[in-house]
Amino acid sequence: MSLQDANDYGDFIDSDDDERAPEFCEIEESAEPIQQYKKGTFYPVYIGEVLHGNYHVIHKLGRGGFSSVWMAHDIANHRDVALKIIVSGNSGDHEYNIHQQIIRDVKDTSSLLLCLNVFHLEGYQCRRHTVLVLPVQGPSFQMCLYKRPIAARMSAAWQLLRTLKKLHDAKIVHGATATPLDDRKLNVKHQYLGRPQKIMLPNTIWKRADLVLPIAETISENLLQDTIYLADFGLSFKTDQPVPDIKGFPPGLYRAPELWHGIKCDYARDIWSYMFIFTHLYLGVRPWLGNGSSTVLANMVKILGPLPQQRMGHYEHPPSGDVSWYCQSRVPDLRLEALDAKIQRLRPEVSEIERSHFLSVIAKGFCYLPENRITAGELLDDESFRALMEHYQL
Ligand SMILES: Nc1ncnc2c1ncn2[C@@H]1O[C@H](COP(=O)(O)OP(=O)(O)OP(=O)(O)O)[C@@H](O)[C@H]1O
Image 1 (cartoon, rainbow, N blue to C red):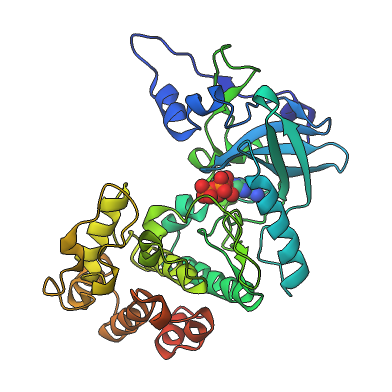
Image 2: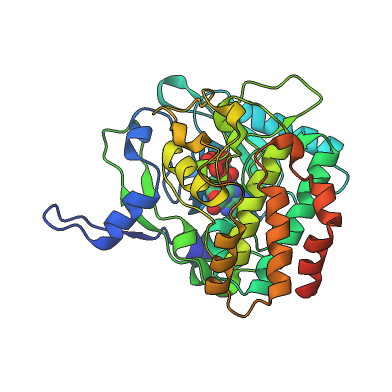
């Protein structure tokens, strides 16, 4: 790390109470909720801080529902790393353990983002935070990959499915969405990542901290590569061991319908999430939207048709389910015509044959009953999936 970078801790954005700078609002919207710092859920960090006597924090990489992720210089090993600081409590232990099991059981881990080290920090009122030390990658491909050309997006879809199969072969369910890309040597700093844009958190929080805009908002596109990694194993579990008490589900849009109805199926839930990502990559837009449980399901049913009758009365996510979701006379089956029209509108260059292959793939993946859903291995061998991949020279 150059001296200039070591001493460059980014820019504070000032707030004028009458009229907040747009950058100020952007940071507030995309960073962790301040309340969660006050309550001790997230661990407060500032740019320039040295954690665990060895990790010099230089930027903010991102955040999830269960962690904030920082870029830091590992002083002892002269390398840059990502520090995933998990919310207070024990969930970090599970994530660390599953990383160890993956390292032990998965034959080829080259496309998985696995931890290099682990340590703990003492947080607010002595709460414990697990910190996973990971290789630094690019931001989540939800944030950037959709801007890339279709060939790169299909390559990502193909890599992701092969990686998922390796995990399933080792009896591991991923349970979350896929994350980053980019394996370029990170001797690049602010010119590619952007300078940290930050707000100083109020001193009512128990230690000094910055609220920082994640790099996904500022990263230069020419840093991004087309290699993808599967990351975030916080919700993963081994199917041949007792299911651990993991709090949380895959994010709502990616969540398989059975998970909304109290059915804890295993590999099939990953295929549903995969299909959502695959469709997004293929069309360039998400197949359906929604920001609360009932809007996600309502919008999904509009596209895919009614949920199986046997699920009625088992919906577990208040506000209560809507009986019309299960009304079999509403729409007979997957609304392929509607999706076909959508492809024609969004990707007019796609031939009729290609469209029919795409529709055949998603009909097998977006299958409501998990026991009938295609598996990762079957999908890799599926005639239509292969035809699509061949079309994109994969
Ligand atoms: N090794 C890494 N290198 C670069 N960025 C990373 C890395 N790990 C995580 N990130 C960034 O941080 C974000 C949050 O990470 P992650 O999804 O692992 O957290 P989480 O709290 O488990 O999230 P979720 O709520 O999705 O389960 C990612 O979307 C990504 O942008």
